[in-house]
Length: 314
Image: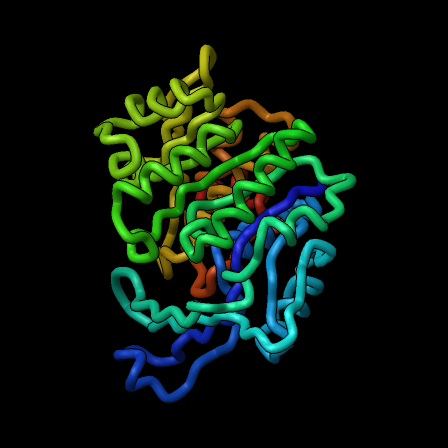
């Protein structure tokens, strides 16, 4: 199935040693971005992700395009802009807790993606759309482009999934963040907030109440991520319940867990699985990813996923 994703893929420089980023001497280059990670996960499960973004004609832009091709991510929705720069980020190495992150994306090529660019895209053959709350926060232009792509997807009756993936530092206020992202969420078929995100966006304290908030907006499926406690899933006027966390032998890096979860849920729904089955696959995919250092290299193929599920632990 061809699934559109929209966002900003970035160059990623991962520290090869622990310590402050300002003191690290060597880094390993890779590719990062929540939507890119989801695209990798979908491709490895046999789907055809098509990444809608804008890159510079520069070494990082070429690296990202090469990475997309290697990972079987369609590039026909990518725009390259002469004279503009591709964003990048740095990630520290740590033995415990979350790593430090430094972003260099202000004024990037992706932040200049516009609604006009979206109108020029050929969406023939696309069957689903996945967006997050990160890209709309990057710039006013990115927000307009996101709204336009959602409108085009709705006109084509494509199911839309939305992961809030909050980045409060990119917004002028939490109030504006909540209002904007909830206005985007109401057009989605499936919303995937974490419980902490749900509290910020809805003012509700429980997974059930967060799900009820989005159901009132018209959202059909809500899956609330609960970290070590798994996930709560709720279908409007349908099934609901808790899906336990998938066991992990050793936690290595939590970055990318939510993206693995999203890839699991989206792929399962695209294949006609129930919301309960989708939540289970999401938990398994997220668990597998946190046993690896990079943001997406641990995401499994369909055969690897089946073996890990059968084994009962990641």
